[in-house]
Amino acid sequence: MTDSAASSAFRCGYIAIVGRPNVGKSTLMNALIGAKVSITSRKAQTTRHRITGIQTTEDAQFVYVDTPGFQTRHSNALNKTLNRTVTNTLTASDVILFIIEAGTFGAADQQVLDLIPANVPCILVINKSDRVKDKAKLLPFAQQIAAKRDFSAVVPVSAKLRFQLDNLQREIRKYLPENAPIFGADDITDRSEKFLAAEIVREKVFRFVGDELPYTSTVLIEKFEQEGDLRRIFVAILVERDTHKSMVIGQKGARLKDISTQARLDMEKLFGGPVYLEVWVKVKSGWADNEAGLRAYGYE
Image (cartoon, rainbow, N blue to C red):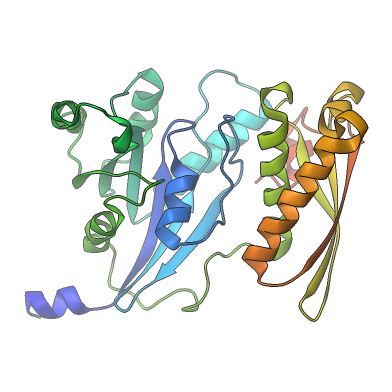
């Protein structure tokens, strides 16, 4: 087969997106596929599940896997589950995107890098490159980090501004195997609407409540019904204490109303139809104390 024939063959594979918390992994995946399927927040540990985002072009299907940020500070049941998700994803991927923040590389970044298998193509993605005021410093920084491993490519990007994302995808495609597409051409994720609805509500909880609320708080869809284009969704926000419940509800219910309104608007945009949304806050003590409890609430 000639080089031109090989390059034009359809390619499809899994691309793991890994890095320490808050380097922009979810933002990058959403930007790459052009839809919001993985939630974003300034709060660490926002992504708890293995989220798949799919983009299909004329000559390739990119199956991105957004992972939780690898946790090094605490050794509780939730963080052990999150870290196991990361390591399992790495070994099953065709390409790995190792995400770091421009100008910053610390012990937490190195710990993630040390987990990456040597036999899997790995692309160093330097995110938030738009924030570096002195662009002359970007090249020496990239060279310094690139020396830590034999990377397949080094690509500075800005996920937020969509800078260099086309170039990144061209580099990724080089290392995808020649395969038929795994998913349909219009699919953007393998997750259900029910799952996405819960994630959207959880994003709004963290966005409006911020660091006041422990990251072990979660969201449970109690009922999801669809009649034509209309979706009726009933959601419980599960917290550990009555004080946390008050934080989420806010004064005269104002914060809960904001959470519900913004979540509904995001759902309508993603699902392409009207949404009737009801949200309650419930105290569920002890649900995250052990791995069995985590599995009961969807953490695998």
